[in-house]
Length: 119
Image (cartoon, rainbow, N blue to C red; front, top):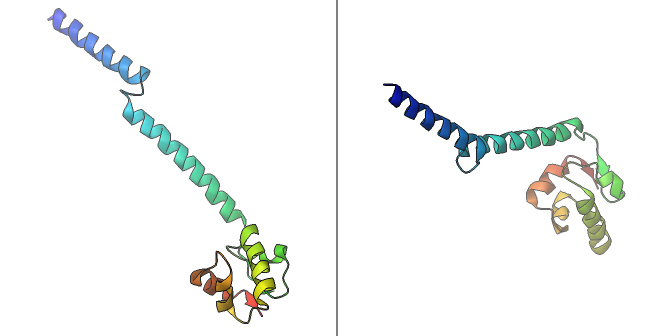
């Protein structure tokens, strides 16, 4: 009986060593580490988004500066620059549908911005 216990103990020790020493044999611990990294990065992103108060005002899109345009939801530096370029190229915007002339602005974005714009 003692011989069986020694063999069992040796096998258990070998398994314990392999799972702790080599990531190839410890796939479940690697997945846990990756999921922790993902969770941490998601929580950082959501913290950044929630710290910015939603824009509730109105902006005249035909007179707004780049900085003013960047206050609009979903408009960053690149889209603000594109809006200014389109305003220069096509003239004044008459309504929210005219925003679809801007590179990077589609129907969904134009409709979402309509409530924040004057013309």
